[in-house]
Image (cartoon, rainbow, N blue to C red; front, side):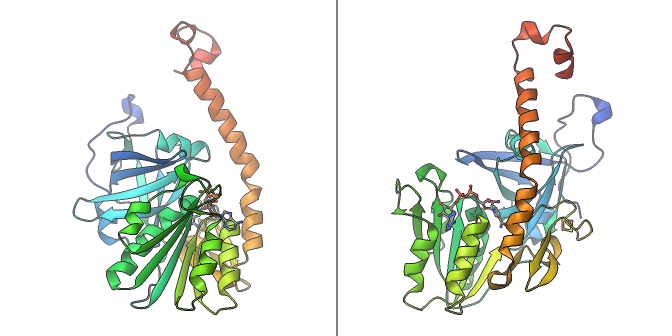
Length: 316
Ligand code: NAD
Ligand code: FES
């Protein structure tokens, strides 16, 4: 389903290239860590109905790749949603170069099943790196319901820790860095071990790198603590048609876009997920290298760019 407000900006200089569908204007851009950016953009219909755990598929411009992104926050009154983007490949790098006043051609959503949330007790929300952005709306809604929330968030070093103040507004936050440059030294799982020890945790939500989610699930399994993880397989259509986001849950095939993206962490085949994700890495790397070449050509000195070489023509 497409959603959004009126067309206010026209990013296309060529009238024939102008899209005929709704655009989403970017209102704010904030750098959260060296490769993580938050964009706040107009998407009133999505802002009104989105729930924690849901995501959108962003199609930045005609011909661009479709990128699944969790809705990190929304303001129904202002008609805006926040997307937190880790620039890892060509498409995400293109997306984070946009700023206020630019517009995104198409956003489909909200997609996926909302998080199943308790109404009482003590929940622990574990966010690894950019996965912290997926944890935020869950922690916010748990807090709103009166659930005691402990968030454990981690980054490689201080500059990679994101959304700490926002999570502090929802309860206790334990911040970890791999190199010990801020907060508690070590992985989030080391802090989780201490929090689980007293035995007063009712549920754990964990989002981050696959090895982190697998480690969290293995820690809570013997304690019988319900553990929800959010999976990030490759997605294409986001409607259950293409099969790209296939995962195995309790031995059965499921599609993260329509059956998830959240699943019982104790039932996920993490090994298969890691294998499938690594399959696409060489293609992503090749696309990134092509992008680097294109950017190099585009930023050539004017004298070069004005020449009639094939390179200059390619940059027009
Ligand atoms: P990262 O590799 O920098 O790790 C972040 C933190 O996770 C670390 O500081 C550490 O505390 C913890 N961690 C990492 N490896 C661990 C291990 N083996 N055991 C225990 N804890 C470990 O993270 P990043 O570069 O920000 O990448 C985040 C990952 O989250 C990406 O792989 C991304 O695809 C994934 N992600 C998932 C979703 C989702 O919906 N599931 C959403 C966004 C991002
Ligand atoms: Fe195509 Fe899920 S993205 S089936």
